[in-house]
Each structure stands twice: as C-alpha cells, then as structure tokens.
Image 1 (cartoon, one colour):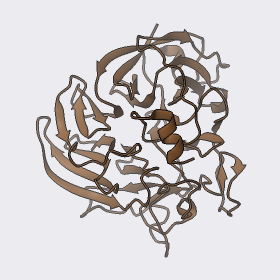
Image 2 (cartoon, one colour; image 1 turned 60 degrees about the vertical axis):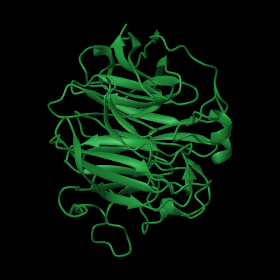
Image 3 (cartoon, helix red, strand yellow; image 1 turned 30 degrees about the vertical axis):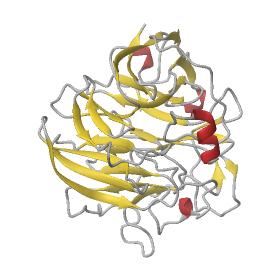
Length: 384
C-alpha cells in the first residue's frame, strides 16, 4: 500500500488512514440508516437478542475525524482534519488550519481531554509533515497556555496514526504509524529504538515535557524508547478502551491483503508485539523475525467488497440499545459497513448498518456511541 492507492481511492477527500489499491465504493445515503443487527449466541455481557439501529445525523462539520467529551461538559468536541477543534454545535475552540499540513493522511488527527477536564490535547501534523501532540489549558471557554508535549519527525507523509486517549489509569496513550511509504522500509514497526509504529503511554502533566510512567514495559530497558507501550503496528488510526473492563481495542490499517483489530486485556503490563512488518494480519509479510507476536482478534480481507481501511470503535456500554451491550463496533472507511462483534467471539461480527466514508467513532459520557463521516455528518447511534 502507499500513496498511489490513497490518491486513487479518495482524490480530494482522503481519510488519514487509507491504504493502497482499494476500490472506491458506491455512495451511501446520508439519511439515518436502519439495518439488521447481529444475532450472536448469548454469553454473559454479549448481545442477548437481535435488534436494529439507526444512524441519526446530529451535526455536519468539515471532514470530522476525531471525537472527545470533557468532564462536566455536555458538549461534544470534534476534530476536523482541516485543522479546527469544534463543538457539535459549530463553535471553534482551537484553530490550527493555518499550521497543519494538508496531505491525504495529514492534518488534525486526534483529540483527548485530560480526565480533570482542565487540559485538551491535539495530535496534528505541521507544514513539514511532522507530528505534534500539543496541550492547551481549557476552562470551557478559552484555550490558552499552549505547549508541545511530544513531537516526532515523520519520514514520509502517510501512516501518521493520530489517536489520543486517556486510559483508565489516567495516562495518555498516543498512536503513531510506522513512518509511511509502503511495507515499512525502515523497519520501524519492530524497532524499539523509535517511537514510530507504536502506541505510547505517558503522563503529560507529571513533568516537562512529560513523565514516563515507572511501570511502562520498556522504562528500564537499555536501547528501547521508554515511552513505548505496544509495538509492531503499521497505522493504528483508531483505538478505544472498554469503559467497563479497561480492555484496549486497536484497529491497525493493513498493507495490501489484511485489515486487523488487536486486543489488549486490561491486566496487561504492556509490551505486546502486534507483528508488523514481520506479518500483515496473521500472514507472513517481510519475513522479518518478530518477538512473541500477538495474534489479531479480527482480520478481514482487502480483496472483498471494496474494503480499504479498518476504523476501530468501542465496546457498547450504553443503556438505549440493550441487545448491543458487550459488542465491539468497528467499520471500514471505503466499504462503509459497520459491524458489531461480541467481545467473547470478536471474529463473529455482523453488519448493523452503513456510514459513507466512516472516519471514526465516538463515545459519550453515558456510554452511547457516535459515528463520524469524512463527508461531514456526525451520527448518534440509536435504536430503530
């Protein structure tokens, strides 16, 4: 995969995580969608009976790609790839539109609020294409006291990752892709001396510019970056924590053959190797020797149905759709389908609807879920 596929698939409107050689799917309607729900066997917290969902449009912004909520605040915050952080009612909170790079997989890519609600963090690429994780103090009205927490040189314009999220432990998790081009030519995914191709874990308020948590898996290993939490990732565009269990679900965009979702149990001490570029999905790729690789829990083919880029969501823990509780939601950008997978058997996901140019999911304070389309709409996922 590479820039060729990105340009061919999306032309002017390209999602940050798109992979090469995919075919653009036919347009889907932007109206609320209703469709059949999965019917997995009941096992504990998994869905107990079938149902339907609809995607109800609640706002329309410019190329929305990331979603966050803030403690004590009823508003929804959405990052537009073009550089603005806005509320769902359209107010601009931060404007980086004159600073971000405008490449197909660049721009403003991620947003997260500190658990206290006092600081907001954005992941974005500058005019040179390099990654910044930047902090602002935020009082609910104005964003002030800007500072860069972390920066990373990017050798190529694609595979920037971009997801930010505070985990149940209160630390900030940061997704970085393998640096780009095709096939990970620098071998970053398996290289512990670089932050590229990793998920990082830091305490952004514990030091300047940040503090390394003492229990990070490589905090004391010579020759390894102490920020690393997990590695062997190609382009982890979106990941999400299960608000009930603390488990981490990671969507990693594939090369030419396989998309994958990885799972990290809440009890993990970190350090998992998810395989790239020794393998793609569960298949051998470069022939490089990876250490103790962890299998993905979901894979699907890039050769079927116009699939191109996995979009990871969340395990549904809301109250409005009882049959959906305990299902992990994810989708594909080009094909547009959204699937719900029982957490006990994640490979058994079933389609629950479609969103054209699905770019991300969001989770509200109440556990209800949202879906974002790069075309502009923001949808609340509701019972039919």
